[in-house]
Length: 160
Image (cartoon, rainbow, N blue to C red; front, side, top):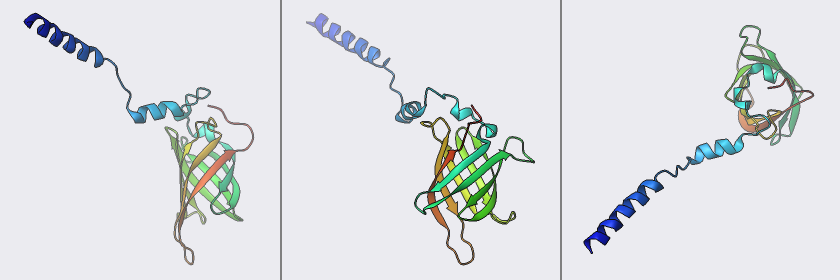
């Protein structure tokens, strides 16, 4: 009887050890892997130059549409400089892309910040879309607003 009891203990211990070898990925890592588009696996490594060109701008909640032209920043080679035409207003922007995160600071007068654009390159579209949030700052006579945005590349992509 003692021998059977000892065998059951050993078998249970071996089973527990073998079960520990079944590694389970954390949920965040599984979600990140599921987002990667096999057609463009290096999207998180894109740099500013892959975003150069013309983009359509859509602010769906505000019903506003416009354009954004991105190019190399004149002072910082790894950064972006852009010009918005949105709702009849022209403004400039400067920013970066890092690990798929997209950030632009917008100025309507070239001196003071008027908005922040924070988004992410869209894996499903292989970087031809950027989704995020526009945070317009308070201005005299106009309250600030946070609203979603979508940027869509117009024409040929610069490539990844």
